[in-house]
Each structure stands twice: as structure tokens, then as C-alpha cells.
Image 1 (tube, rainbow, N blue to C red):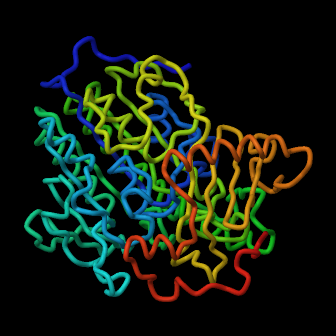
Image 2: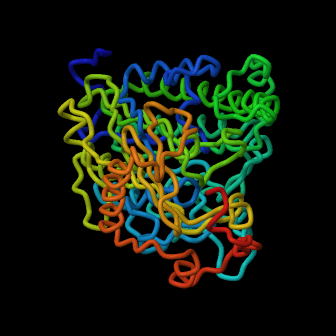
Length: 471
């Protein structure tokens, strides 16, 4: 077990803990040094892990950007808040994290990528990505340096509180971190909630600063065993650039942690580092997310709070996206509103116990964009337990893996007689999750009609016999 020392008296001027939430985009769970990856260079995250709760099975409920964000900020599942498709708007009336903390006297700030404003029905799919998010659509955040969506990290702009366009100088994650440090200095004497959302390491992979790209030789990159041989050269080049982004972000994490220490607020600050979803990075021969495999659904999650979480340790039990907000609220001494569907695991964390959770729900109600129907996408529901993955699609059971014996998920156990009892048990766990969330697991068209959504571009086109593809 790892320990760290805290001062007898916090330097903070208030009793309520600050909350700093750092979100990377498309950073998968195994792409950090503390997780055992010997290729990626992340000294600051590795140091942070030695001072934090390290969640080995942090699972994204829906492995794509906007649905994760809406689920996290509301503590709800995607079919409850309606954001199960990118660029669809989170309803203004949704009760969100910033509104809850603001009611408790917190200053609230948001920096970086938002991706929750969405576009109006019938508009182009990406029409809102370069427009300002008006004050009534900021879901309780006051300090505001935000762009709806961009992945042009070296030519990046944002809109401020007055909807005025401003420019991030250089690599935007560095400038955003500087802004976060400035915010912390100005608000250190009062409780604050600050969320910073970086765009990297989301593709394009090759756009990290040159000095970080120079740190990686593609020929020396180790690959996961499930990367097909014919794609391994491409995978090494992509992953080397992906790691360059991560090392750049690690530098920013170090700057931020140093600033927190200098301001004397480390002990009384809940510091969270995580990501929305992962990236397949040529595992199973594909890129990106939405898929139910670990490379897509598992993310890093570190929570440091020296005043109350005094012992650094690993957490093995699975935690899901909607569980994050209620857990943070209770750690902050704030009552959890009834609108929140996730589980508050703070009592287990505070008492030194592991999380008791049968499994984390994973879903894709509507395949879209990079994994739409014509690209092989399918509706699915599943669970990721500490050991197993079980998934079914509309045609029935689809995937079953023993992740302990088969960490690269190469042997599908669905339908094998020796695993029938296990499959039955996991099916019951999955069904209990669906019952709890009032999820009838309907075809995609039903949800699009229910929420009055239109498919973007060619997303509605189905390949012939798509239910049987890749079975």
C-alpha cells in the first residue's frame, strides 16, 4: 500500500473541498505508465497515481463524446437525458453538476471542449461546433472559456463569457492549463468547481508538439496481442503519435499539480483525472470507439483528496459514468438529488473498502458516424464486471469474455456449453441493470422517433442483414 503525508491543518481558507475535474478525450485505460505501460511517458500521472485512488475498472456507459459528458454532468443514463448521439442538445432543464455545486455556494468554471450544445433539428450535423454556447445553455458554469468542438489543437479558438471569440496560443491544452491555473489562483479562498476538458489525445494523432513526437520511435512501440499482423506497422506509427499527445498532457498535469501545491489548497481539493472513452488503435483491426471492447470502454480514473482519502490504493470494483457525480457530491458533503441515477460509492471509498458493484452498464442505443450501421455498427447492451464482459445485441447474446484469462478478448465464449451457467448469470445481471434504468432495449429507430431526432447524413443506412454481421 502507498501512503502520503498531509499537513495537520489544511492551508485552505474554507471547509468545503474544491473540485478540479480534468478530462482527456479518447485516452484509454492502458495508455498510462502507472497502468503498467512501459512505452508511454507519464511521470506526473504516475506520481499522481501514488497519491490517489486508482480505479482499475472505470467503465464508460457509452463510449463516445457527448453521451459521456451528458451522463457525467447529470448522473443519468443516456436514455434518460436523451444524449445518446453526438451533437444532440442536452436539455437546458437538466439538473447538472455545476448547478448543484453553485447552489451550495461554489464558484464554477469550465475550460475547453463542451460538446453538449448540439444543433437544431434539421441543421447540418456539425453546424454548431464553431458557434458560441449562449449563457442559458452553459448548465450552471459561470467562468467560461469554451469551444463546442474542435480537434485542431494548434489553431484553436474559444468563446468567453461574453460570447467573444478568443484564441488559444500554441497547443491549446497548454494554454487551457495556464487559464486553469489563473482561475485557481483567483478563487483559492472560496470553494470552487473547475472542469477542464482537453481535446487530445483524440485524433488527429500526428498533431502533438514536435518535441513530444520526437520522444517516440514507432519501431519501439509494443502492441497489444489483438492487433492484426498486417496492421502492426500502421498501428505503431499511430500509437507513437497518440502517446506524444499523452505525454504533452502529462506535462500539463504536472504544471497544474504544482500550482495547486503552491496555492496551499492540495489537501482540501478533490482532484479527478479521467477520460470519456478509449480508442481501439487497431486492436481487432479497427480505430476509435463506440464498440464494447475494453480498448474502447475502459478509461483511466484517479481521485485524490488528501483530507479524507488518506490512503492511496487500487479500486477493483467497476465504476460507471453515472456513478461519478453522486460519489463526488457526497465526498463534497452535498446531498445527492433524486434526479441522479448513478450510485454513490463514497462510503466505500472513505472506509477503505472496495466498490461492491455487480457490473457497469455499457450501451449503444444508436450506432452513428464512425461506427454507423453501414460500417458494421449495431445496437447493444452489456455489462463489464471486474472479471467478465457480456454483451447482447438485438439478435441475442453476442459477446462473452473472461478478461482474467483472456485480457485481449480474443475468445468469444457465447453459446459454449461449459459457460452456459456463467452466461445465464451475467444475463440476469444485465437485465437487472436494464430494469433499473427502464431500458426496453428497442431498435435505434424507436429512440430517434421518441426524442424527435433525425439521423445525421448516412447514419440511418443499414447494410444487408446487418444483425448478422460479425457474429
